[in-house]
Length: 225
Length: 258
Image 1: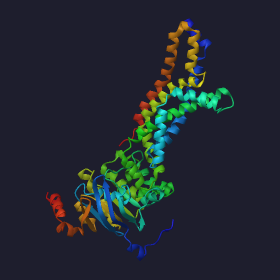
Image 2 (image 1 turned 30 degrees about the vertical axis):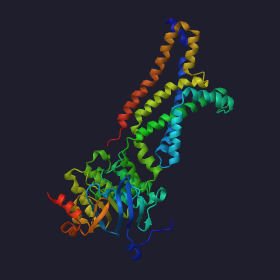
Image 3 (image 1 turned 90 degrees about the vertical axis):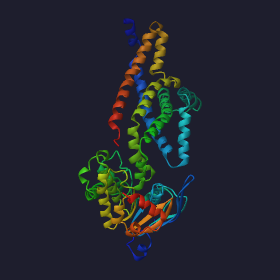
Image 4 (image 1 turned 180 degrees about the vertical axis):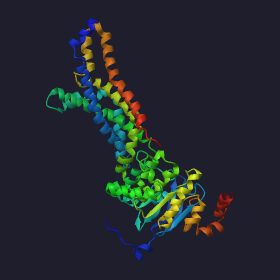
């Protein structure tokens, strides 16, 4: 037990988790924005936008996240010399956020689209009948109801995103938790199993409240029909 | 925009407010509208009746382009119905629509349902829109429900709110697509009463319905449809007492037998 506790003196585990929280937070915001735009494309009356939305979703949803994040580091950063910040660390951090956001936007889009399917067609017809064109009808009538119907699937995307933030290691964000776990295992092979459990428990603690919150919110926000 | 708000001149009242010329529509193999020709003049109340599947709902929905048509021409107040975009939205704002299933915006209060169009489409100030909405809700007798959500109201109340919502846009014509078909029997009259009052005030109305009592009381003209065609047009008394076509006789025999 004492051995185990010395781990926390040598390694800053909370700081590593804090990196994952930050990655998840920013990636979630960008994924939500981009995913909403993609969902609008997919339900829009303009065929080329529908096609673009569908193509985006199918490409990003079906590409392994590791490939996307490794491409961010090796392709965008190293080869193409695209840098998103002054220093190396924040540049890699932002590229990882970009990769996570691009990937999860595809899932956000599909979650919102499942929410749109909970909105009866008559709502859109009524919106059009009072003279709202596509965007105002989407913004004022369809999306508010779609989001409320998509709380649970969006929660699932967020949970996946938090856990997937560990894949940022593939994008050379070495400060995040799974990278630290690897380092700790390397130097403290006597404590492999406790180290595993520590990180598993850390993620469970992060994720459980989100599951509870979305279950509660999806009931609370459900649109009465 | 070329047309400005014009006063009702003899010339403009001579043009029909709604006109359908040689309108055809197919649902796949099914020919749902066959060469429909129909003109509705200002202030006229036209009731469209016919057996289910006769195309009467499709006709009603085509008039504000919730259904597209294959060929023919539909004009509202002399303007050809635009295919899409802003022009179509603008024209729809002039055509009120009441649906069978009410379709009130489920996430908005009764008051917000009525103010949404005036504020967002017409750019009306929120205070002014609220005043208008409350007066319309009062007219249809649901002003005491203004803060509730649609799901908290009965079907009859919801449908009356839907009428107020359409009226808030100050439409030139009101379309009713089987407005009482989804209602419990005891709620039908409250909705019909609102519609009769509206007809008496001179609103131009196209009403798809099975309510023969309403047709007798409020219609200027009955249009009988079967198999996607207009079989017969007549004044209500004439139609109900002395239908000319066999299909109409058969239809009336079935619904008036009990």
